[in-house]
Length: 287
Image 1 (cartoon, rainbow, N blue to C red):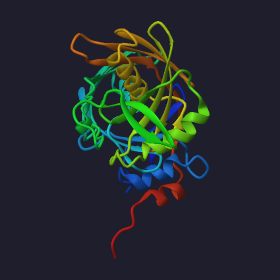
Image 2 (image 1 turned 60 degrees about the vertical axis):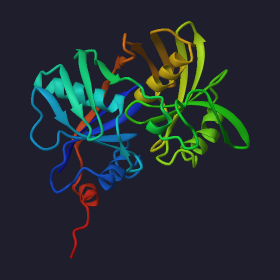
Image 3 (image 1 turned 180 degrees about the vertical axis):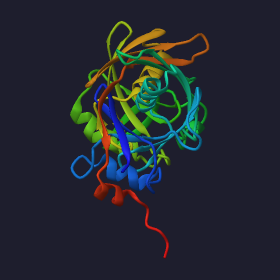
Image 4 (image 1 turned 90 degrees about the vertical axis):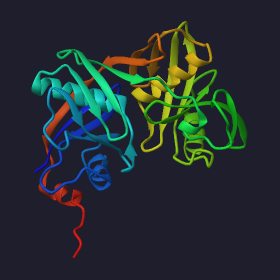
């Protein structure tokens, strides 16, 4: 049977699974595991370590959203993986390769579950997102959705985001406009959509519509994307508190624009997937 650990960061829950027993890291296993009624339930899965066992300093993983789609980077999922790895192996710093990018994590406090991650410099170029019909940087550009005209700042911080600065975060707005922008034809790769409101000096309130999970309680990379957009627009300083429905974290901008995120991660459960569910996770073999 396949072993798993379940973690959450601000209510954004991830399963950590080391592929075994004929189960491959991929869309099918992710969909089965993440189903909240017929599986374990989660916003996504981090499969790993892959290949050779993780050694001090590095590990390779693959991340999938609840709908099975590949995820280039999940700040919360990777922080959960880093904490689990630290508890098992005692390694507090880890470079994690997702197959798309490498993120450096640092476990600040194992017992309290405080984990930081470096997300690099956000790329605001339209080509990096990508955002069609836009040349140069995708900063404060107009886009139409739901019969209205919106202004977005799009960026890539390991995965693609579109950030709207709003006067107040509204769940109905997230549920209506979020999916329209996420699947907008100008975003051929789809995007995660963030709604950010300035709630005080260097404080943002943020809601996220994830392209593979819908509205979530929190998103590390999404919250950092919102902070990066607000920072680029001059709305916040170099250290920002990001408040989401599931909790809050701190993001910091280094001297070269590098983004660092620090927040709490909590283990929910460990266990093994029942044999019947495991059988549904195996890809059919060609006859």
